[in-house]
Length: 406
Image 1 (cartoon, one colour):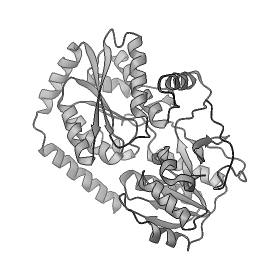
Image 2 (cartoon, rainbow, N blue to C red):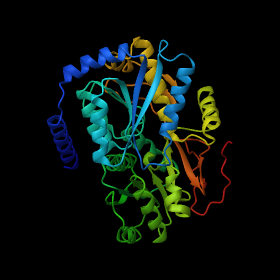
Image 3 (cartoon, rainbow, N blue to C red):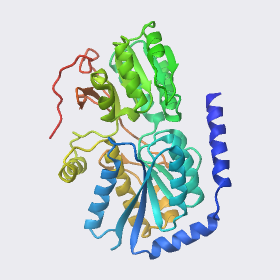
Image 4 (tube, rainbow, N blue to C red):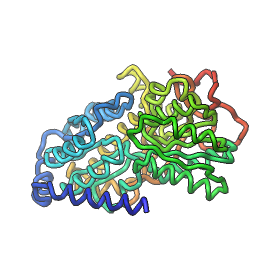
């Protein structure tokens, strides 16, 4: 029933968006093709949430563009980035329409949440603008058969299976699951529960909260009445961090796991010591020993005086993948580039190799796991393969010195 309701909502969004379109699809698409091919620069839009301070996506995109431009850009044409910062959800869709109707743009990168990225993808599809999403993780983004939308981050459907496998490898037997009722939060929580069931592990309690909820005391008090040895939280920041903080204050001592949406320093900034030991999946391993990743980390630290995060890595990879597809296409025309992107296989990015299926979704993705130790995330020694089920790195009271490279 929930999925039916979600699809109905998406259909309504399509209808509302189309009602307010005031330019013909064919006119804009034809004009865009002419403009982007004649322009002296390759213009890329980035739409991002103004309130997000701890996600370094813009820094990653900018670093990639700078490196491309240092090597003469696309056949002598420089990459030019224009940033559009949104104030709220409604503003973000207005910006998407503004970007889509500007025929000087060859592509757009961004949109933090699936709730905004999905309706925005409808707008971009209608106006023939290539859209790369390095942050929105719901599989609903790419399951509509659109021709211009690509997800450059592993989807919740993939990650949820890996989370469940990791929890089992850690020796957990009874799991509590909470989600924030958002499209992505519920999807990953559902996926974890289904995968655990397939492995013979029961979910002892399943509860929900609202994205804008402030008082978590009743929910946390109820959780303490149930028997479980691990808690999975499918939610987004800042609410997920506030929930974890309250859960600890209310006596929840079990190990906490989250989705990739809480893979951010915002978790520690909001929840403080209560977030210590929280385990999250990530597609970016800062310590990965391969030349592409090492070079990226070195250059990022040199430019910004701090290490990159997961959003920075995917923003960087998105820009580099887009450039690779444009080179192969020998044009910046979105219709041609989108076609070639679907056949990119094993592109070496800083988060691993990228391969897209015909829907624009990443395939053969891999998650690493890390836990928050005081103020830093620390990677597990054997990502996604915790053979020693007695390991105790992520204990809430852990004082282990993080192994983070400087």
